[in-house]
Image (cartoon, rainbow, N blue to C red; front, side, top):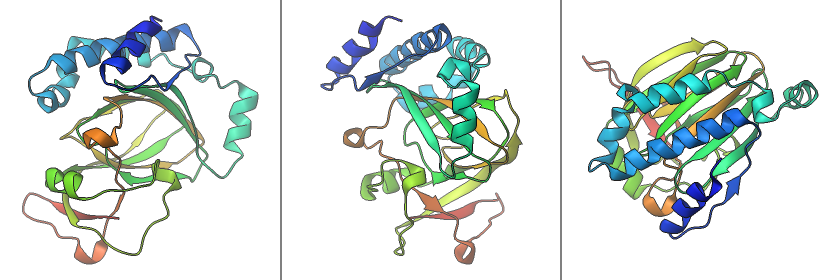
Length: 246
């Protein structure tokens, strides 16, 4: 892997590269694909439009083709470590790349654990379910600019968040997908499609995420967390549901 490529990208954004730990040649290939995707994104005049249409690009198809082959060993999980993490009642994760351009991170969710409803503002996330089965519930947000500019959330990662009593500005959203994802599947979210989602582990599972671009509070790409409020849930003719941010 050309580590200078990502470190140079970090310096261009006035920030140092935070982490680079690639466990296998396959992750190196995925990282190179991520750099190519970011360079295309960086040159785009309308960056969100580029991300929303990312699944139609050749580089996306090539990246997903490589991610399809990722195994537990590729992310540094031998059978002993895998079994040990699955016996814990908490979610584990490890960053392989964490820099301003992108992040590459794997998560391990023991059966029954879940990642609460959260968003990825002005970002795309490419995912490979390496092992197990998950339920994923995804929503499209309609008033995102207001939320991302006025609401802040301090918790660094979704599964460490203690839900607060006070309710922030309600978010209008439409459930676009609620399904079971099987081992080996790949999928993607974009700024407009499925940007807010909830993940439940139906079995012990692990998945790999490529986040493009990376979270950055200074660029208003900080993660916010939500719950669906049944009392105020409304459905229009278009099937628009209401979720509230916490």
